[in-house]
Length: 483
Image (cartoon, rainbow, N blue to C red):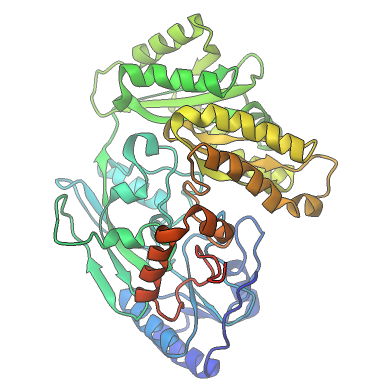
């Protein structure tokens, strides 16, 4: 880490006052207790913290922020600590505090008429999903880390996930939110209104800001009717062009039925089958690439199975799909999704990996995969490209795993070479180097070139206006001012 926070004024006095405010359950200061909060999920970033704060409600968080600001102490928000880009990890100065939202974990209510849910920031996504399901509705956001990822972090990073093709990213699901601002004031925006043109949509400033403009504490989330019919199929295709053709076939007939459309490479699928217990490919033989398609509708009697079978039969007749299997039960549906959801974990077990969370126009996904695969193989012979992700919305995780005969440290030393190689292709295809994981501290160096000029300058002005002392998640998103 290059950015090091300044030494806080009188840290002992600050810790004393924070301890009085938060109580024994609300603050950790022992190194061993803080260690899990100072390392990211990928074990790439390792920092140190002055303390880990665990406020129980918005008032405690607001007062804690005021105290930290008064002492010049930077604050790093953390939800489930599932960041792929180091966005929730403190620097190595030992001067920052980590603010963990895990105790703010209540679902404040579900309105079946408005079809909304009010949640606190520390509610895990899976808990919110289950609560919506019990109320006869659906929270239409699904990500691999949903068991531990928390709603505040999901909104702060504008998480996407598997259902973006139909429902949009987290941003599209937020009707209102509450946040603690960099001076400790509370932004009260918990409105349920679909139409509200009273000036700027300030809530959207916080969604996707990665905690650099304020800390989200509560939100109003739009729910959807629970599906009455769901059908899932795993399809073998020759390449990403075949996957795109299949997507177009479904979309041409009824785009509203597509709930997820996921691409997986043959390399990535092989890693899942080899390294994940209970994973098993239900097709006769391995394929160069795969698609997992999920259709859903809240309308009973829609006969999605007949629709799915018809599209797949036509695709097989045209040679687009070489083999396919449809889930016959909820258990089989879960097993098919397991093959997709375990890609990140399988790659982690296979060795060091470099992750490129990128997006391009949907029609250019096949070109992205083909060109980036060739470029990475030319860059490092033996590298194992294992792209997968949300073909239906153009977001591909172009991940690459170390060659089997290359030391992990030597491979990771080439991380920026790999990311730049992929990014050059993405930029040529009018894409983005950060689709849904955020910028964090992994890729701020790309911001100057990709989002320079008026766009980056405007972002900096907003940051400076709200957080003039740069105390909220410093070192994230923005490149150094001299770059």
